[in-house]
Image: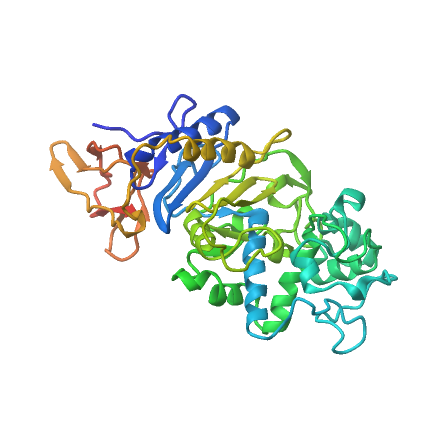
Amino acid sequence: MALASRGLAADPIPIVGVPVPELGVLDGKMTEIMEANNISAASLSVMRNGTVLLHHVYGWQDRARQKPLRPDALFRLASVTKPFTAAAVRRLIANGQLSLSTRVFSLGMPGAGVLPYAPFGTPDPRLGDITVDHLLKHRGGWDRDIAGDLTYRERTIANAMGVACPPGRENAVRYIMGQPLHNDPGSTYAYSNIGYLLLGLIIETVSGQDYRSYVQANVIGLDGFTTTDWLLGRTFAVDQDAREPYYDEPILASNVFYPASSAVVNVERPYGSFDLEARTGQGRIVTRGIVLLRYLSRFQVNGDSIGGPRPAPCSWRRNHTGAQTGCNTLARQRGDGFNYAVLFNKRPASGTDYASQIRTNLDTVFDTGGIPSWPTADITQMSPPLPKTTLSLNPPLLTCETAAGRHYQWQSNTDLQTWTDYLPPFVGNGSPVSVAPESTGAKKFYRLVVRQ
């Protein structure tokens, strides 16, 4: 009888997804970086010339490393949210609802700019010069290397404004509007979360829709994805989607929701050291790597034309990375037809981030002929095989055939209506797996779910 991995230290990292033997070297690169850095959950998705060739998730969903990740696992994207925001803004421009030269702030003059917020404090006289184009290109005039990232200053902002912490997006913007700019708008590149915080609000103000509805209809939904394929993340673990992994950074930090809306003073950093709900435009999307691949095949992921149409094939290469406490992400776009997305549930405490390390490793494989024979099948078109199951009576055993890389879950009930999980999920390895049904005396029904 084959036994499922239970996540002990000596156990191999579970790999879930349609097996693609030709691309085994890529699995090796992923598990290598995970083992070297004690990363418990990750995802790799690869596309070549518009065809999705690989989508694997690696590791475990829970902190105890008992439950293997589901194939439909969702990860926080952190700043890889920004390309989606940019594409939504470009759609507003294409529809004539906005222009690159549109001013961002109205500053009390109706029609002068999009956002009507009143600054908290004395605004920099250059604030009215900031345009949508400046925000897209990280040239709004703020520099976090000088002043720090004000979008993470929830406690400072709430205390200054005399409001409950966290202060939320609009209060954060009002506070930021009262702070000095560091550069003339348009003059200097300085990576800016502030700019994409503002773009998220601009999308909502101009479209009259919430951010998720507009992005779904005008960006993600263009490729047939539904709102089950992505969501906007929530701060606390109790509010996470059931498909998300544990976000691994167990260092304790001050809870920005305490005491106004949480009784917990200190929290693990991914779960309350910042207000994830306030990062809608710049770092809140939670999704699968396959959604990123479709974005990469349609839109430009970075640079001055971020969110615009993907350029024609050539030798260019672009990527966008993301890093928050508890995640590190990469969306890589290459002019030779390769796209790939890598998602981790952990970021390094110091040194080179995991996104940069894996990009170097994977690009080397692609560039040096590390894959002699490329597959051609689109794995998104493959349905999981129905498992053959049998019941033996002496002793009572439920046995199922398994396919390698598939995620299985036994479920049970007493009325054929409300199914509950029975025993932990497991990953198939091509061999049969047997379990003993409960011997409670009550009639029970069992089924095996194969997650795709």
